[in-house]
Image 1 (tube, rainbow, N blue to C red):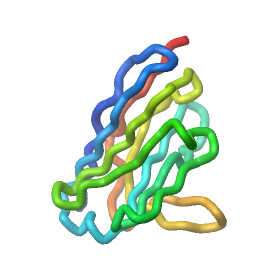
Image 2 (image 1 turned 60 degrees about the horizontal axis):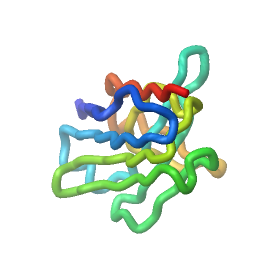
Image 3 (image 1 turned 45 degrees about the horizontal axis):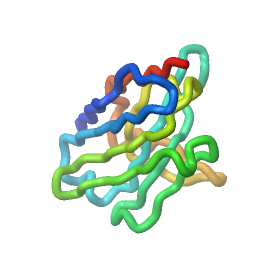
Length: 125
């Protein structure tokens, strides 16, 4: 069973930055497109960003374009999300997983791994 461990969350003021990391327990990570999702209490988990297996292509939900940058290090089986110009609306638990595209967005590939514990991001106004 592949394990995903997210880290790097915390409390930050609006306008600040955080860098999230996701470590995968398998080197098969390298052949999967990967992504970040986030969830707030009472709402469905939503897609945030995705990156192709070779880092050639990246995709972002409209609300984070220009502020977030997704990247990966296949040698280390890690995924990152650099978040700048944070707003209170970015407050959520952030999760990583493999992704599959469908209908113009991306869905988690739960055949790759179950959800990790996530990392809490809280942005104060």
